[in-house]
Amino acid sequence: MFDRSRLPDPLAYYESQGLDLTGWGRWRTTRCEFHGGSDSMRINIERGGFCCMNCQEKGGDVLAYDMAIHGGTFVDAAKRLGAWVDDPRDADQVRRRPLPFNPRDALEVLAEDAFFIAYCALYVHHGGMLTDGDRAALLDSAGRVDGIAWKVKP
Ligand SMILES: [Zn+2]
Image 1 (cartoon, helix red, strand yellow):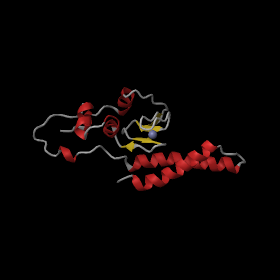
Image 2 (cartoon, helix red, strand yellow):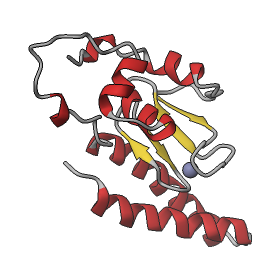
Image 3 (tube, protein in one colour):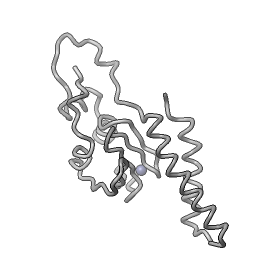
Image 4 (tube, protein in one colour):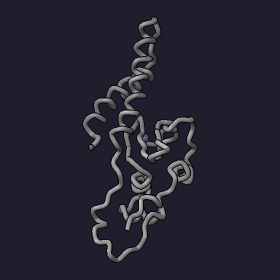
């Protein structure tokens, strides 16, 4: 059976995957292994949730990440992470799933986009010129706000 309490600490897990997490808050920044971006992955070190600000790969816990990176079933990933205890009475394992990216995590990611969009607006208001890169990032932010609103399941 799956025992969530045996999952590794998110910070230790992500570091064991060779990732270098920067920042100090609950959300850390690291490279995205899914599309190869150098600093677009945000990781929640309390719950293990992750979301790439560029390719939008996301999930709600270290299990979701491990399945996305290494493949296999939920049970395979739980075993890899030491969170599986053999129990012949357990018959409902096929119904188990990693946690989806949760709505609260989504709101925190959106908050970052909101600040970025506001920053760009103020910069232009004060006569600044956005670079092509800034404009692309601004459209990405707006697209993420739109996309996350429809894709995150409760
Ligand atoms: Zn990515």
